[in-house]
Image 1 (cartoon, helix red, strand yellow):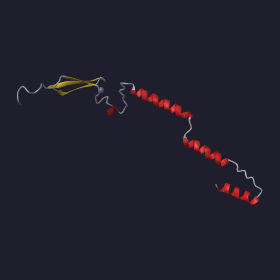
Image 2 (image 1 turned 45 degrees about the vertical axis):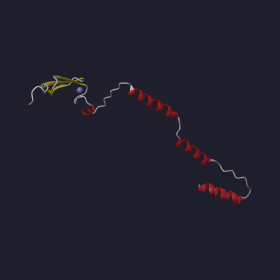
Image 3 (image 1 turned 180 degrees about the horizontal axis):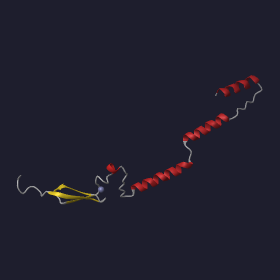
Image 4 (image 1 turned 135 degrees about the vertical axis):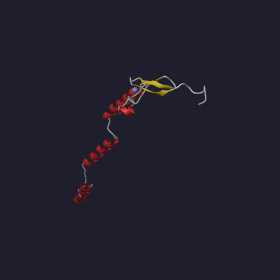
Amino acid sequence: MKKDIHPQYHKNCVVTCVCGNSFETGSTVPEIKVELCSACHPFYTGKQKLVDTARRVEKFSARVAAKTSIGAGKKGKKVKKAARAEAKANKEVVVKTKDIKKIAQVTLNAKKK
Ligand SMILES: [Zn+2]
């Protein structure tokens, strides 16, 4: 190896995580401090961990809650349309005629629908 160009190698570099876990490894620095390690990373733990710096998660949940509470009282387009169709179907057909054949035809047409 060429002299005076390689940094000093520490065989027992201690890696310390904010979760309290620590382990040794080899490095050019004697100590490493990390925020995530394999003991606390969501990929390994399977639990959700949110780093909410600007209250973004909180704001989003509040927005979703507000939207669902507003929408609960309203009826959708489909519901309204179905109600209108039902009202139309129940409407009585008033025929103002004396011709008995015409009345029979109208009632037949109404039954067909
Ligand atoms: Zn950790």
